Image 1 (cartoon, one colour):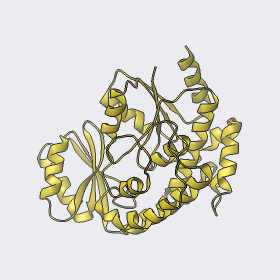
Image 2 (cartoon, rainbow, N blue to C red):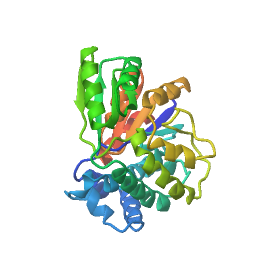
Image 3 (tube, rainbow, N blue to C red):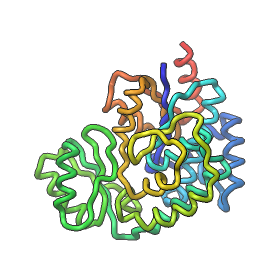
Image 4 (tube, rainbow, N blue to C red):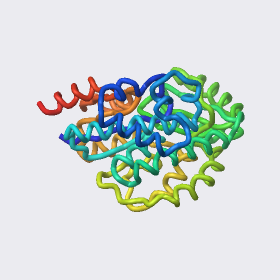
Length: 304
């Protein structure tokens, strides 16, 4: 058995998403309490109570990373051996933390800052849409031919690709893709055109913040979003570039499959990533862990 742990990305958040683990696992609770000391807002309340901040990118990002790192530590405590980590966009920071590339004390302030930069990069001018049921090559051609800025933001899985860019350009490309046979084109409720060139200002501001981190070589391979290859010993360019570049998630999963991974465990809020995995390869085993009960169940199943 080869196991890859997948770390949740932005968009999977929901109110009180951390409550079950906070009340039901001491390792997780201690981790969240410690992470709470690293930021000037109430991370515990953000995860455990209904609030308006959770859908603001600057707060969504630290909340999801904190929950994911806390669960990851609880998973490790159960003796589950991890062969690879991967995370969707924001989830890459959780993966790098769990793999030892940066510390828990560094990661939450870093992603809070990242969220602020991303939120401010293209205010009010951008949009994103999920395109279902049409080949990536067709989408790429339409993006190139559409006036204005519209680009592929996420290669999620076969039949699901996200485009982003200027509102008018995204709307035009969406209509063109419908006429070319896309099964559906769904506008996304997001605060910016993430993973497009419109986020270049965020990338430029983020790079100096990334350079302040005392990066270490991961003790478990972490797969990069920007090219579906493992991190080696550089991080600043790759993570700055990530916010304005396409996320090659399908390619990352295919890389892991090529390495012999046959078991994928998604940690953090939701089960979006394992859903993508199943659309890429239905033969592999997938699990999600966002509650202590799921942790107990997965631990038991993996031990059999």
